[in-house]
Image (cartoon, rainbow, N blue to C red; front, side, top):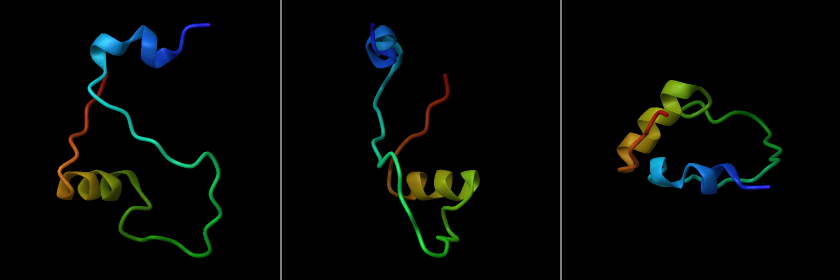
Length: 51
């Protein structure tokens, strides 16, 4: 089986890694929605790409 990232390597500029499962108590208001995470990544100089 070929990994998705291997099959589309010519179109991928980078990847993000994270935990598969995470239990949080409470919320992180600044990044708990799509626009908030986009702002966070932009503020920390991470570009966002769409396929």
